[in-house]
Image (cartoon, rainbow, N blue to C red):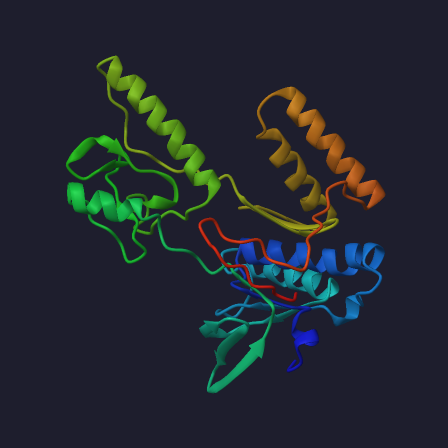
Length: 289
């Protein structure tokens, strides 16, 4: 991996939660599908995709059998999965990782972080101006009705909110949580305008879905657990179902069906070899990709 030509084809993804797994699956299909058909000067076998996870299995919030199924699907797509591996440093094109007592460095031109992010700086602003308490990630610790402590006129939802009034654990910063919180806040505002109140917010877990690739996904609905083609179909129709307007749903369904049967996408990014100058910059340096 020492030569530049080699590591230009290497991708490292840090974190094997749903985001990391879906990224790895998409890149695996890209490498062995799109590259093979559309970029004939690139050998798909030269592409190496490495997925790193600090725990003993990928998708740690899913049942173990679904984690194992997802890992098998990723391996089929050419993704190398390394578990019990912690990333200790990232610098330019180098990733330093530790597995047990073993420390090693790998080079990759593309490094993708999917192991969680800090909250928006808005949390710090709220803390300074309202005295709202923050957790270690910078999220606002909210009241049971999703308001800031001492400020019933301020609502904090989504991945900026630390809501741990349900079972003592903060809700994850994912879209289903934010959608339900947004609906609750809208209903609470309407209730207040009528001089009424609502009970505290309660999140209803409707299940979890993660798509790995073509005909491959995992779905956890509690007592019902799916994998493979059936889970993939469920993922498609659930996502289409949440789109607004019937026309949008039909259009997206048609586009996805076209991509599925033709194995082709209409959109392509064609980039040159030189970087564009940054806004406000007076110098431009050539850079070879």
